[in-house]
Length: 168
Image 1 (cartoon, rainbow, N blue to C red):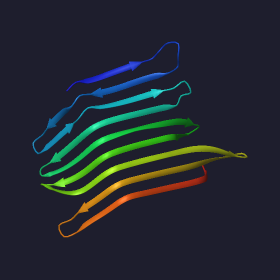
Image 2 (cartoon, rainbow, N blue to C red):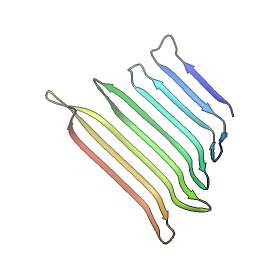
Image 3 (cartoon, one colour):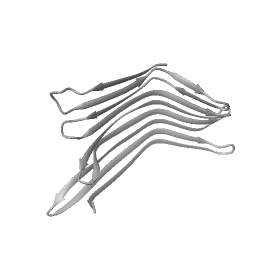
């Protein structure tokens, strides 16, 4: 496959953009194989010095012997904002259509429809600088197969909110 690199820095703006994209390609070792379907990664530095990343991966399969890991439909975006000595995350979104772990012909783990959203914001309280965090994850289905057991979760939603955390 081919790898495409694009760099964009308009001289009239303080914004920079780097985009990497690739067609499908594969690598094969003695007992390992890696198949990577088309993917794109874009990094942008905005005028306010924030960083934004977006990614799309159609699929990936990594095999070692009779064990394999497969991912399909991985997309997302992330925004990073510098704040003194830390990086805040005003926005994170990631989605995964499907992930599986197999040994031989039998799947051991199957995950479908996973999503993660989150944010880390700064807030002021007098002289104190505080951080607020909010995270939310969803899973449509998670199946775990063992030789003598079968476990399954459906429509799982998880969330975590923390507020007023001292940055020190």
